[in-house]
Image (cartoon, rainbow, N blue to C red; front, side, top):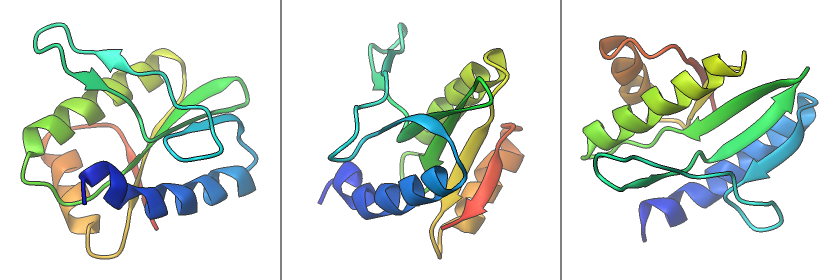
Length: 121
């Protein structure tokens, strides 16, 4: 099972939370939703796409699912980019942390000074 496949049930649960909170224009990397816009990192040519994007009060917010990963550098780069994009659009970056993954997410955010809010999932 790939990381993307592993994230699907968590993304579906996160989308429910986003909908209940009243966000609009929801895009998610799951069936039934338009895929969020992806970005290409020029230095590596890697494609980076958020798990979920949505709009609240005209502000674009990004939502990520935090799963423990051996490739921390890739996760950090992705979260830094999404944090920068959200702040440029007066939005926020939210990191959904499933049970058992919260400490991993918190450590990465604090160590790398990424402005994001961790939400339990």
